[in-house]
Image (tube, rainbow, N blue to C red; front, side, top):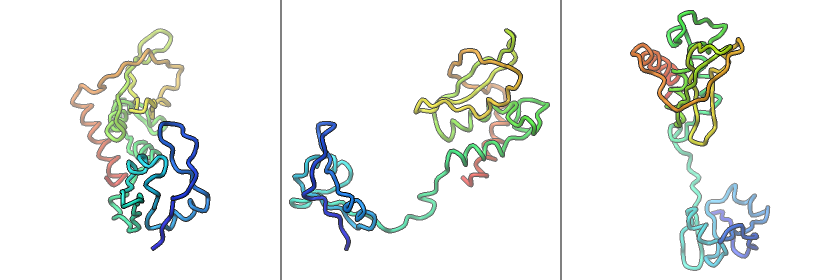
Length: 196
């Protein structure tokens, strides 16, 4: 059984109240194929190791490393690029609020339903603002602010004629039954494309 021995390593300079053990590069390389990690219980920063899943066993801290592969459904992941591609691929006339939607400007009229789908997958809140040009209000626009604070707008490119946005506020973009139907269509297509 392979193991990595963390005992006897120099502690790093503490950046907090607890110091983590400093590992030599040869120790790090050995972790790749190890079945367990072992550290001395008196290692500086031992409380951090315990919080990371090490268990006390006599004078040692031990963490078994599971080498069994998980079932595919347990580790399936979607990248942000996959999500964006699925959303853009799912846009169509029946998901757009604009009756004159075309593939040339596929984002047109998709902001409300797109913001809802992004929030369903990534959380956060929906931002709403008026779209104005030359001091005239044209319509509303919706996009997302994720829990991390990152602002995501997959449909901003629909505005191609010098339009600007007013100050945004968090809110809900859909109030009409027609809009809820468009959201359900887009959401179902995106989930099918992602196989969720």
